[in-house]
Picture 1 (tube, rainbow over the protein chains, first blue to last red):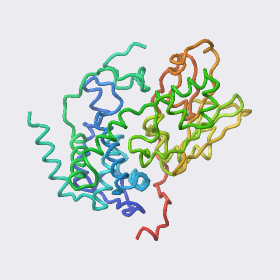
Picture 2 (cartoon, rainbow over the protein chains, first blue to last red):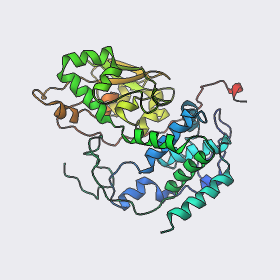
Picture 3 (cartoon, rainbow over the protein chains, first blue to last red):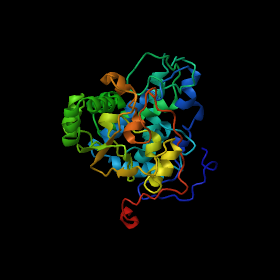
Picture 4 (tube, rainbow over the protein chains, first blue to last red):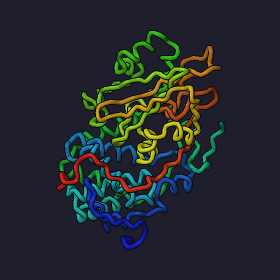
Length: 126
Length: 253
């Protein structure tokens, strides 16, 4: 969605990951909802969002199961730094993980979009 | 050290792992929270890992903090026999402060290989750790690495200009003190055992552990009485895009 705008990224192919922007992830780059913005808005002092622990566990599980080796993921994260540089961590780490999984075919954009809708409906049901 | 809720989220005065006090909640569902859950659920649905695996790793991750490393350092400062064990058999010494490197799988995690070296600082020798390859870090003892530690900028520059980079962190190492940068490799983890500072004579292990922060065990800060937290650190961008160099370009095809 914002693919024509910020952070000109001429290189489109890294050694570890396809660096082209992904429309679905571009639509999620809501900077007003990063923990950096959310936490002070709700007077919360935790330096990390609650989901950070789950994100780290997902990375560990993917590596332990052989689907995405931690070292390869870190190399790909480095390569994607410029693509997501406008987003702070840990949101950047999350977007990067999703980007790597999509570009490596572990997930498809359609599947992820559908699951996002499902999760959103569930969380916002009450 | 009064802690107020409206501090912009930057008061870490009780937050180097010793405290999990109740805090106000964010009553707002964010897109990122939804994305994390969606990615995880899809991965489970596709059989990339199980929900049980995820629960085990989440609990393990949640239990990690620099407090364990701080206990190790404080104990080494007060117990010479334990100090000797820290260098002779760091994994066994870790167990004595409640950290079993074989958890949660029985052989550790895939990124926390069970090989640890504790680096002994002296009045004439200072250590600092890095992982130039990626972000290898002694997670069982120190919890998760800070983002600046993972950033290519730190990883590239600390090995080239260590004194200058430490100075940027506010740590001036006198020229007469030797400085060693230990680069973690894929299988080795390092942790710094700093020099016990003056002014702590007669302190208990608990008191000493309070001043051993994460940054002291990385080597970008020194413990001192009254300093119990690590301030926020800047994350500098790399001046050039990253080309990891982990495998030849032609091998990518």
